[in-house]
Image (cartoon, rainbow, N blue to C red; front, side, top):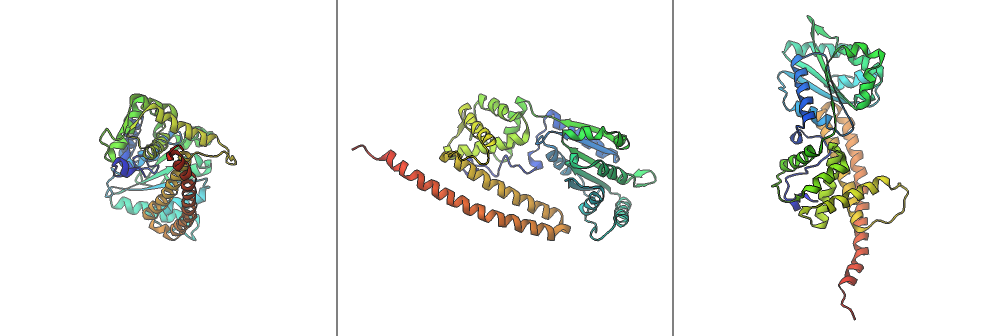
Length: 359
């Protein structure tokens, strides 16, 4: 909605990770240096932890953009609560290997053959496991066992483990001693400070063509955004996306503290209001929610399509997922169109009355 109004080339605060928007804060730059170091070593585990939305996945996607496909074969696995056998099947599938109707012995054989073949061609294999805090301890042990594949004491698989803060506690379990011994580097990502938050916002805006003036931000606005978001990148993205939508609806070219407070209050109200609440919304609130809900649905479709393109071997399953998402989107769009029509009809008499001369 606001892209054309502000003259952007795209959405500056999209939620899906995009390496173009990687911002090298002090913490993120240090974590990226650790990943590069780990990659140069070609063995063991690198562990990156951080709170929800601190930019772990974007960090790894940025690293992926540096990889030479002639030297490194990489795959990323976003886990749920996978048991050991399901994890092995998912790892095999992530590298495009056959996995259907195969037992554990066959899966291990497929994977070892793949690792040895890549080594013969001078390529190393990198596995990135995201949301690792969801894995049971047995599954983490299965990952450690996969790291045992070697040729002449040269490891054939390297793994990066990304997880939320509780993953650090899981690694301290007595049963994880052998895995801990193979962690060659670890880093914890925290939120951005106030100065970094401002630089982060301006960096993402410049990526999509922001000229520094439209929209503009006064000094207090940046501080207010940091106060509402705590400097967590994903929260900053959500807040600023809503702020730009608000600016489009209210025709703002400069954001002041009052605008930040208006959006912040609206977001807090949404978080606090029970789902069953019947409290009526104002026209501005309803438009914001309609626009945000539609953009969330479109984001889900984008993510499903991205997964489909990255994993052709899952084409049938992903096509079914994509079809379901489209089916879900169609009634949502119909409801939103009806709500917009009702909102226009409800506000039209007020607008006429406001402009009617006194008699």
